[in-house]
Each structure stands twice: as C-alpha cells, then as structure tokens.
Image (tube, rainbow, N blue to C red; front, side):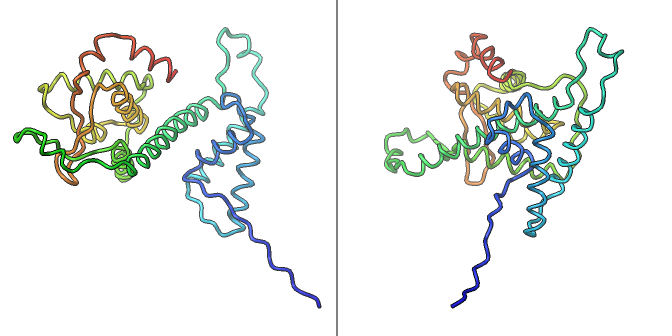
Amino acid sequence: MFTVPLPLHFRLERYEGPLDLLLDLIRKQQIEITDIPIAKITAQYLEYMEQAREMDVDLSADFVYMAATLIHIKSRMLLPRDPALEKQAEAPEDPRQELVERLLEHERFKNAAEMLQQKRLIEENVWSNPQIRKFLPEDTDPGLSVTLFDLVKAFGDVLERIKNRPVYEVAGPDVTVSDMIRYIKERFLEIGPADPLFILRVLEEQRSRRAMIALFLAVLELVRMQAVTVAQKDLFGEIALQRHTHFDAVFASAEPIAQIEQDYA
C-alpha cells in the first residue's frame, strides 16, 4: 500500500534582534569577534533572512538595516586600497570596527541579563522568614525586596520608552563604564548621605543609547562591589539606589575602577 510521506517541518530559530543573530553565527563557528570574515557572515545572515521569508516569518526593519550595513561593509573591504593612504603613518580604519564594538557591547549586556536571570531563578526557590519584621525596630522600614532582575526589567522599559523620543548621539569620546561609575559617585555626593538616587530618572537624562547602557552596567558593577544597594519604597514605586555601608571604602582606592577599565577595555 502506497503512503504519502508526511511533509517535513523545519524550525527557524528566533532572535530578539540582528545583533543576537550575528553574535550567534559568530559564536557557533568559534570565530574571533575582532576579525569577522564579513563575506562569510553576510552570506549566512542573508540565508537566514531568506529562510525567514520562505517560512512567512516577519522580521523587523532592524534586520533589513543590518543586512544593508553588512553589504556596505563587505563592499568597502573589497575596494582596492589607495596607495597614498597606505604610505601614511596611521593604519586605515577597519570598516568592521563599529560593528565589532556594537557586538561586544551587546554581548556584555546579554551576559549580564543572563546572569541576573539565573540569580532570579535561584531567589525564587529560596524561602525567607516572614517573621523577620519582629526582630526589627519599630521605626525601621525595610522597604520592598528589589532584585537586580527588577532593575533589568525597568531598564528595558526605559529603552522602550525612548524609542518615541529623539535621542541625541553627542559627538566626542565614547562614554565608558568607569566614567559612569564616577558620574554616579558625584551624583551621590550632591545629595544627603541617606537620600536615595532614583536611577531610572538618571538613565532618562542620558542623551544617547550608548550612555544609557554604560550607566546601567556601571550600576551593576557598583552593586557587585557593594558600593550601593537597590531599593523600592512602595509597590510599583520608583527604583532607587542607596549608599551601601561600604560606599566610602569602595571609593577609597582607585584599584576597583582601574580593574573595571581593564575588564571593559
């Protein structure tokens, strides 16, 4: 008896954005991110987009823009070099440099988010004693328990809101994580020792997406170093930073910030 074979079903992996797709292509093939074979990666990227089109998967305009960017970089690398420029002391700029920097920045943020997700899962399986309030002084308000996962979610909400307003990319040197750590320190010194710093307000004051990400990573580093704590006074209230008891000790030495500069170099 002849039977009709069942149709094959293919699963197309979904990505949150074009940088996620590029990062996955690079990491799966163990390619050095600072020396991307742009022709090979561009071909694989376009192949993914073609598969998505055949399977009626809607891709955002960001994917199309990245495809155009990759093709532009590829064309620049195929152009013959100007002999006059090669004689100059400075080496010509690598067309891939900006893309590499964006990928490295995206990878740092993604790794931080994954770490916080694991921390959240651990915290969800840890029981706390509801009778702890009996051991606190009557005038003590411990506030609400806020995890770094809550901070990540709030930061995502800020990034979503800024899509509807102009964000100005200010020309000049790139803002670094260590710069933002010093900036947060200065903001704390402007207020009282016990006053909170509403970090989401500070985030929305930044004029570029890069500065926002650098500021957010700086907050994560300060929490890790026990320089600040994350607090929330009321349910659905603003998330604030407060000085940790080790705040002054952390900034007493230049070594922690120097280490961060090395880590994010």
